[in-house]
Image 1: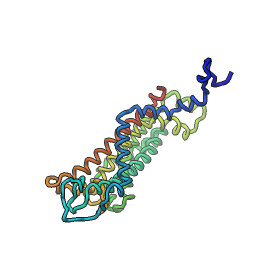
Image 2: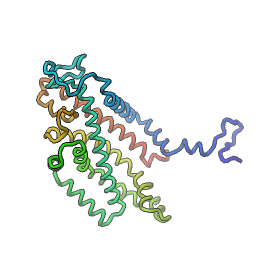
Image 3: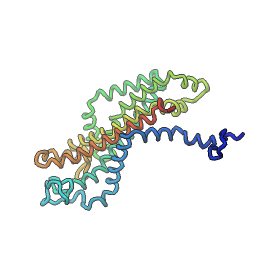
Image 4: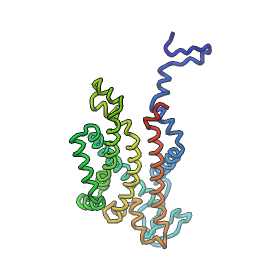
Length: 303
């Protein structure tokens, strides 16, 4: 009989094996689990809306983010300026949209740097062990031992305040947590029977890492990556506060918070809206990270 033919008298009930395999693929099961995670869907919707506003900022607002109007300085929110104006009469809503482009770009790029470096070093450390593991973990201890703010100031002072420099400085000082998480996951996975079986049939280290170790270590990495995005935005804010971040008149959410500190009581909206955007993006990304962690959890793969 045909491979995919079912024992049914109804012709419409006939199905084929390959088609069923496609529908039951791990990717599709992961997507179905993610779709059932309501908070992850909420986070995706919030982040998608924010990204749409940032991308179409020139059509959403008709103001120039750097245009000054001293006659309109520190005006409260109104129909003309939905989020009010700052100390130079610039539209806060417009600067949030344009500044969000820079802040999110810094957060995502710095996260990519930290996750790439951390995953690479953590994978090498956990997979090979021995003196390699000892050397990498001692490097992690040394970097963690230094005050991060001091290193940020020192590197930013020497390397300058370009966007690339800020991304590299933030990313290269945030990889240690990811390295430790990946190493711990790899050390735990080493003793599993399927890893031993893969070694016995002659699988190469590259195959073992890419097909068996990394997929099972994906959950902690995703969670760390989502945390790193919001942490990078806050770190850029700290650098801006010290005058080492993105230089004016270019707006970022962090620099807007820095310049709003003098108007916290007289014009609280200048600090509230940038801070609220950082909070909103951070919580949305964390929701998405939780959903991705559950979707790619190896313990859920057979469900």
